[in-house]
Image (cartoon, rainbow, N blue to C red; front, side):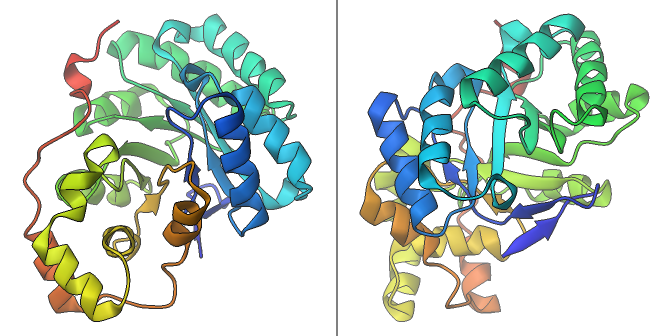
Length: 273
């Protein structure tokens, strides 16, 4: 399953997240994912695993044109010249000529975002990234970016799961041609809380699926791109096995009721380094 971004680039609806995956762990996870159907890999400079991700991509034997690779610009590297330098360092670590999506990892000041975005637009036009976007941006961050941007972001990657559902943010993004992409779709280090949700367990039993598969399918049916993270082969495979069933309107509504806005990661308006 794929989505078409606002610049015509196709993005797989599901990818493998690599947050906190280090050294050989990252390599093995990415290699397993690519050998078992994944074509979308998400990393970031701050994760410290771009080299391992790149090595796994090379060793997988999957043609580059079949892959969608995302990396992100860290806070310390924002600014016009620093952004260009950082992207090329990421490409060097990944051993790639281009990435498919380059994101501003966290918003800082409006002015810094403006200068950073200008550099990203130029790198996009020069072909070093096939798409550009942002991560952890709220509506007001996007509105200010629109004031000076010549290219509208293709993606906004934010924490999204059954308890942080981002209705209003997704509505705003979709009205402006921006896809919402969910990190921590299985509630990250709070996955045990997800696994213990009775409403999800009930649906999972009915569908003969696992609770994580239900949680991912919920986002998928909302046209949200998902990047569940795992380094366990069985779970990597399980997370990808969500295309042979659908949630009914009633089941979707039951999950909508789980929204409580309890974020597990920092508030973007207070993420300052």
